[in-house]
Structure formats: structure tokens, C-alpha cells
Image 1 (cartoon, rainbow, N blue to C red):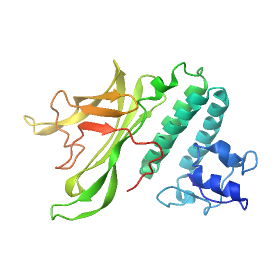
Image 2 (cartoon, rainbow, N blue to C red):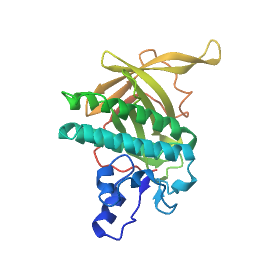
Image 3 (cartoon, rainbow, N blue to C red):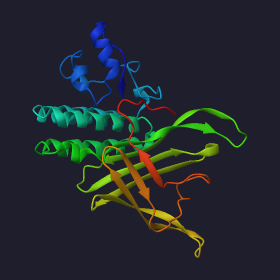
Image 4 (cartoon, rainbow, N blue to C red):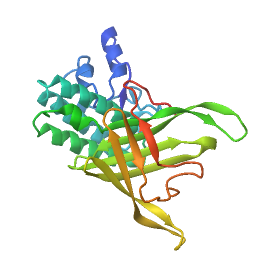
Length: 266
């Protein structure tokens, strides 16, 4: 969860606000005693980005949060001599935290388990010879869009997001789509894809007009990457995406990489 100001020391107060669990523990621990990351915090101290106090989270999610903290500290220690890779890992972790704070509570434990497996797998590996190449596809894609409706009015802005997250298993990545379209329509997707020749292939359910039914995993969708810049969700088979989208929505198209430091907004 995200740490709010808890220390009477001014410098620690600033770092605590900026340091979600699992992202900047080194900064947070400048203000905390050794082992503090593993101890329960008062309910008023911790909250997620929706403002939900951590004490209302399931106990297994809170324990997973502590386990991720420990794995993250071990990874930073293992990469102490590789500042370029640490910088990329921190960016990737920020993207993961944004996705975490937009995830329904009943799916949080699985999201944490995958993240812990991935971070722990990196601890066992040597520093990457070319970290930018390895990490380039992971992260947050999309853009901020205006919410507009058929009556001609527009009200506020929302984030159209595609997250590509590592699962901890070689050659796999989780694809999480939460995109916004005209008149309140949206697309939502949560699937695991497999890397093939530099592309991510995801099998999706699709409508079969002849059977008049959705057929599971019948649609082969390909995600192509322009590393560090954008991704394109391609639909070579002309599959229907209505299992995941409202009438005016579509999974397919190009999504630019979010600029570093862009906050989430819903």
C-alpha cells in the first residue's frame, strides 16, 4: 500500500509520501527502524490510491505486500552495482503499482503473487547485459482521454491503459487492458500471453456467428512492440472483441508508452 506521512522529521515526511511499498523502500527506510517494513502499521497510516485504508484489505494481501517488500529489497541489494538496470526496474515497478491500485480486491493476491515470483527470479539472475532491451516491453501504455457522450457533453478525463507485466515465468507476460471510449463504453481484459519472435501472442474468446456463441481461446491476437515507444494490438484473424468491449470499444490499435511520472487518474 502507499505510505503517507508518519514521521515528525520533515525529510522523512516527504519521502514517506513518495514511497509506495515495493518501490522506494530504501527511501522509506531512511525514516523507519530496521525491520519496520515487516510490522503492521496503524490503519490511518496506510492507504491505496483510491483512499481505502490498508486495514480493510484481506490479510493475505497485506502479507503479500510485505513479501514483495522483502523481495524488492533483496533485488536492489543484488543490483547495487548496476545503476542502469535499477533505474529501469524502478520505472517498471512504478507502472506495476499504478496497475495494482486499479485492480479489484479479489484479484490483488494473484497480482502480488506474480510480481513476487518475478522479482525473486531476478534476484537469482545475473545483472542484465542489456537491461534496456529486456525491460523495454514491460510497463504502462495508453493515454489520457476526454469522457464525451452522445448528447454532445464532455465531463472530465480518464486513463485508457494497457499494462504489460512480467509473470515470473520465462517467455510470458500478463496483458491488462482498461480502455475508455465514446459514450462511456470501455474494454477490459486480463490474460497471459506468450512471447513468439519478439511479439506477444494472446488467445482470446471470440464470437462465432455460425454457432451464435462465444468460443473460448479461439482468437489469436498479436501484440507488436516498438520498444520504449508504443505497442500495437493486432488482429490478423479479424476476431470479434465484444467479449471484452462495449459496443463502441475495440481492443485493437496503437497505444503509446506513458511518459515517466504520469499519475493515474480515474
